Length: 405
View 1 (cartoon, rainbow, N blue to C red):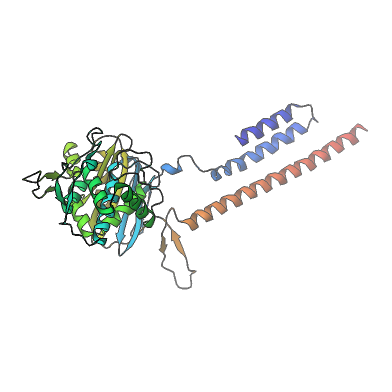
View 2 (view 1 turned 45 degrees about the vertical axis):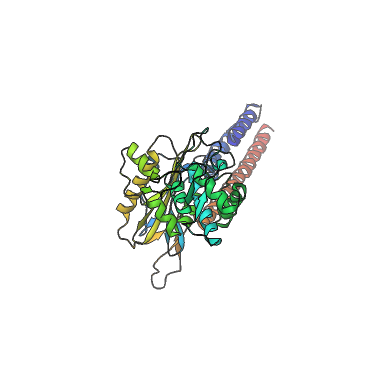
């Protein structure tokens, strides 16, 4: 826009009656200036920068994965090793999105922590109340099958929460562990702050649609990493089939199937490569999945959101894990996350140095300063040209005046 405006002003100037040589020097200045205007273009941030897929390094080589291989709208892949998280793949990872039942990962983590803090056991009993079921049937919410007045071990509530994605299990766990669902939601947001989740807010225990219940692929990845540190929660998310204990409402217990297996079967996708995780789906969120896989003692966690069709979220995770296994030369291969620095072997007598992965702040700063310096240089050259042309024009006009005399 600013370049078009400049050209229009120059054109209007040229159209005014001027000295015969004036038009020529103005056109010359414009021709000389255009290359510098083009060079200055990179300072403008591209509109599609947010849509670029970025990867880290495996043994010094970029993890090869193309955006065209993804169905999902956002994705974040991280590796967790020896207490440190490194991100290996980013695609709109910090975009704020609705996450549907991925919310239940936070519900499970907070409920488990509260249960342990109060000294209760997973085998202690909780009673499902009418308020835990209120409005769920009308919303066609996912349910584990627990009924009002049913006395259930906490253990089975967690399975109902994470396998069947039961909203009544979420409400029961929240109320029983925090005293009320409202107090529990406050605990969820406290935990989000403790974990450093910058793009997350929770408004309910279930993930049912609420404009104030949202997160990002990167935040959910960090959340699942935190939840997987509890062996019990990790084991629950790895389980594909489970039967709860007999209760006063279900003499034979409840049979539960992991929604991951159900989606895989519906789309005819083998999900064995995925160790475990949690699914989510709403009209507003699309199909979501946060999953994990252990390779050589290191835990990889992948979160995707916004897949359009059933099974596409599962397909994305299978594709990413297959690419990961294919490109890992060994279980102990060196992995450098996005934004981390790689040490370089220094030749004797050589300067100390390092190199950066895309996303490193120091590299971005250096690139920005280089661009600014290039623009300033271009401006100075243009100003110099203008002064030179003005001087030549003045000299030519003086010569013409002398010739007329």
